[in-house]
Amino acid sequence: MKIVKEFARYAVGTLFIFSGIIKVNDPVGTAIKLEEYFQVFASDIAPFFEFFVPAALFLSVVLSVLEVVLGIALIIGYRMKLTSWILLAMIVFFTFLTFYSAYFNKVTDCGCFGDAIKLTPWQSFYKDIILLVLIGVVFWKRDSYKTMLSMKMSEIKIVGSTFFFVFIAIYAIQHLPFIDFRAYKVGNHLPSLMQNSEPLKYVYIMEKDGETFEFETYPSEEGYEYVEAKLTNPEAAAKITDLNVWQGDSDYTDELLSGTKLVIIIHQVEKTSVDEMDRLRNLTYDNPRFDTWILTSSGSEKFEVFRHANQLGALYYFADATVLKTMVRSNPGVVLLKDGVVIAKWHYNDTPLTDDIIEILNRQ
Image (tube, rainbow, N blue to C red; front, side):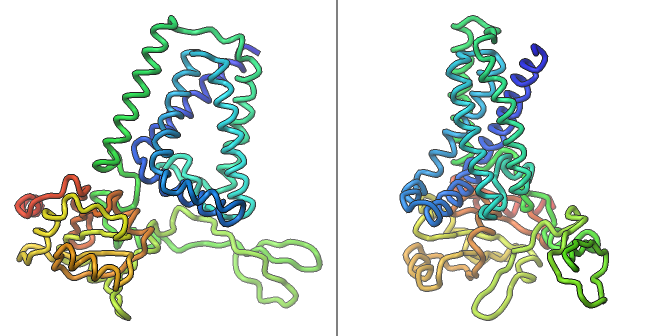
């Protein structure tokens, strides 16, 4: 039993630290996922969940840092009664969350490990069931764990870790994630990621006379009723499937991915920071080395008002809000593309000068 008890302690602690650090690296991404959950719950369960949407970023930091600190507390054996109670409450809540998402197919990615490791809703639920069992062991044996450090040293570790990871989270919010796990990270060739790496293969699930059958090719024989098609090589699927840029009835996606484009991303103008708008405005002036485009998810009338108020002279196009939030965790944000390759990305707090961009292009 001692081996099981210690395994549960280190397995849960390590997983919580790993999961928390992934989220601390990208609090804005976690906040986006929380907003999605709150909106689903507001629609399906109770409208009051909508009130949590404005607090999503704050809650993202709190929950992410709490995950890391709980993992550390568990491993060093700090205040095990309190730690085990909080762990149990969190895993019960998250197990409900992932079950609800999986059963009702509401949120297709729980964001458990940010963008680093993608899990299906049911995989997330099964992961939480395993964690629930392990945390159950920790909770059951909470009085038998011994503290590895003195109480004073344990408290220094816990307080120090809390302040350190809060600082990391705030820095990531005010700049960009330290590690970018998304398909739009620097160095990626976007057109390649928009194509399947090999032909997709499916297994067709069919029913006939109450029995279920699987076929590698769609059956031509009569009497079979289609149930579903399962993708058998999901790793070959395109990593980017929703990048579309348009203006009016015209598609400009291919043009965006050709030549050198400095893309200023502004989604939801009512939530856009104008703190560095002077520097962004300077990037909209004509330059022979690159074309400046603005991508927005706001409606044309609303964006026209915003554009005139901030004197942004560049051409603007439209794209999906989720895509823009995925491209850069900043509103506004700046992305430099050359023939579809992401050369550089900036948070609005780090908005580059024109000379900075030309220097980067000279090194290419």
